[in-house]
Image (cartoon, rainbow, N blue to C red; front, top):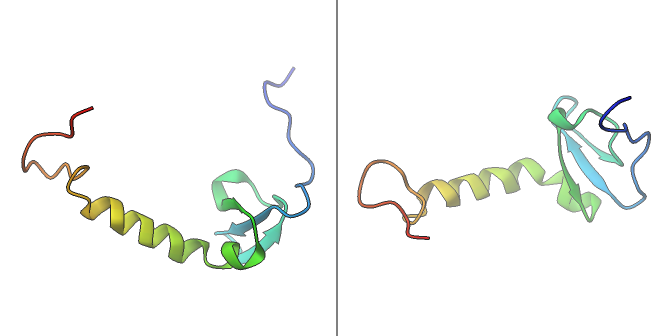
Amino acid sequence: MALFKRREAGKPGEWYYCLKHGKVEEGPECRAADRLGPYGTREEAAHAVETARERNEEWETDPKWNDSGKGDPPKA
């Protein structure tokens, strides 16, 4: 018996961006490792790569989370 059931189709209104094919999909058509999402709208999914890039840049430059060896680690 499988631990996880593969969902055959996505829910209407769930949008994903497929990194492998470079396209927006309604519902998960491609495997999870190849997609970003879910997003609430087609437009949000279309900008998924840009959104991820912006968030990564914010996290990399956030002094609270910068682990470049400067200063003390963030306090919990």
